[in-house]
Length: 260
Image 1 (cartoon, one colour):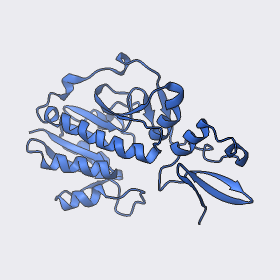
Image 2 (tube, helix red, strand yellow):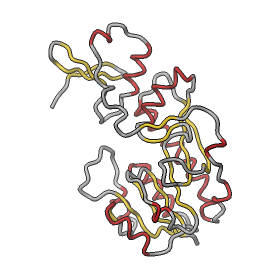
Image 3 (cartoon, one colour):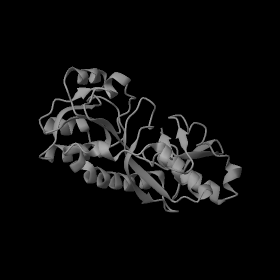
Image 4 (cartoon, one colour):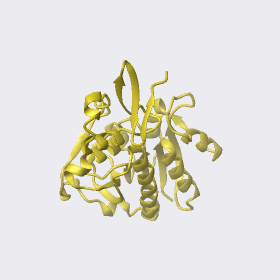
């Protein structure tokens, strides 16, 4: 039976942990996630769920302990830290990542926002999720498989995120048998084999994008509409403007006053 160490956060991480725990032919030997007192914006806790299932989760600063015991797979699901080479080289089979975007098209962060921002100009109305092999360079490893969700003209970044999470679960469930029988490594396709534009966005890629001049709002064009809904991802701060010295938050469905 293959062993697997899960490095995860977010509700998607909880759902993947549940499926791994219930699988009769995979043994979860470690769970690494945020500390109990970590401030996060999402509902659900991988740490709490791991404890409920009988695991003793490790904190992010304890991750090097994974190298102390053999393991067949590492699986990263919304894990926030970049793994170093000794850790990536440690599993006997593969280090895998469930990336919430289509590779090689979108590497990095803020992918739902940028996917909406680029959809019209690229005439590319879908957003993907990818199971891939991890390498030292972020999101650059060989691809195992992908799934897609439509980008709708009414989508916000949050609504797209929710739909892609469902596609991610479908993708993950589809490949659990190959993880269990150790054949997943036979299905690697290098990213160089894929066509299309390639984008990389850093965590600060939205800095300076949220402030909108009130005169710009009067124009009411499609680019502005796309920008506002692409930045609409509760509970994060959306786009905003200032009118008579008062900040107004802008969302797909309207506006609201700023409250501290």
